[in-house]
Length: 260
Length: 260
Image (cartoon, rainbow over all chains, first blue to last red; front, side, top):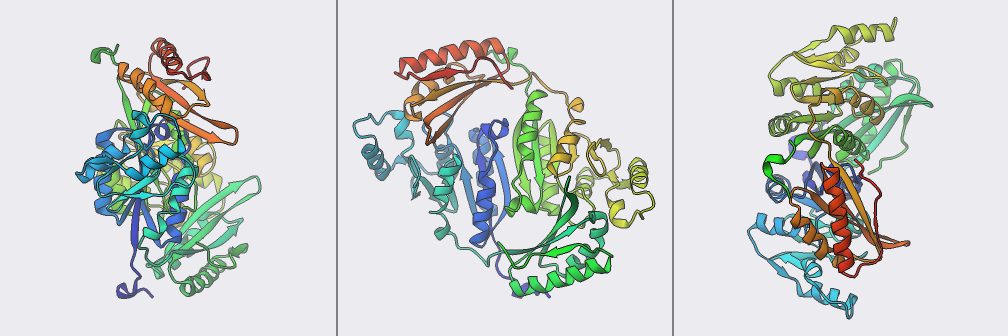
């Protein structure tokens, strides 16, 4: 089924979430999920994610590891005006370049805060590593930036999502990953596992996962097949349904079509 | 203020979330947040989190790094009966021990599935690394396990939370971290940053962060002070409120008491 030569290129990314507030439990992160979905649509596989504290050494070490290992790194958080916002400093140090006040950001802030002093804290937000390009912020506050294969975005979810829209066109994505879902009700993974594994082993180029659910309304599992070829996925859905029926499972509901 | 000798011990942990479904964006993780809060109450600081795919090499490499660096590692996901559930295999390999079928789990499953065949898939869930101890599962399905400083739990949130209740008593926590919140409305971080930084620099043993909000109801920021001494925190709240007032900020609302 899958020849290595025919496999479409896999383009990978890592997400680095920067912020003590996620690690302390104060804030429930939602950026990772939004970025994962966005990358999938652009043909980029999210391969790893890390949550790191507002600590210079930790941020630089993780960033240098991730940007060497994956095609892209997207960071969220730590780009505001307060003393704990150290992402720009860390990215500049990781790349071995200096920070400078970007004239476009200074002009933008001057226009927005007409008459209000551009104090040291506000000027912090205008700092961009040398060689970096701006990521448009359509929501509020100053832009993010990218340098090399690293995209630096805000942590506030609505701002991050706004910035993300200015990231996609810069990504050189591979074939888009699509998925099919086969829902099984009234049978547990103990029964599903054998036929599922048999089909998975026959298609090593696809990802097949089982995500059980149970609650007052019943139990079962969603079997998710991921790949890059809609025709292949459709054939494997048929194969999986047949294998499940062969194992005596009756309530099988394949999705009508592929989804991202 | 803070003498190194007087600083209470900091006990650290990392969380490792195992699962393609989080990285693909299919599932919004909530386990990290639940674990972070739980650890905080037990005097353990969550210092880092990683999300890794269902890939043996990635899981083992990350686990060996994290268990050497932090006091504890808590993992979620990958302990079901299907072929993509490889956490037990990876943990055993990381520790260099074999897996064996735990008789208690086999007995538990035999009792639950009275008359139903304990097939190969179900027996997978009974496998525990040699030297491991069980983590009780009060919700559904087989238990988790711990070995060394690593705690292996289910990925389904309600099951994970149930297992977590059997983890706390095994943690040798440090002093519990408490926090105070000072809410500022109608002033942005550009104004808040300077007084906040001044107070933060005077108390290097505490963590002070600024978490801005804005929306139809207005804008402002929550200033969060974290530490281990309620008296010190109360004094710093007063100091911060005075500093903010000195910067011309009027709408300042400190929380009444410390919270975890």
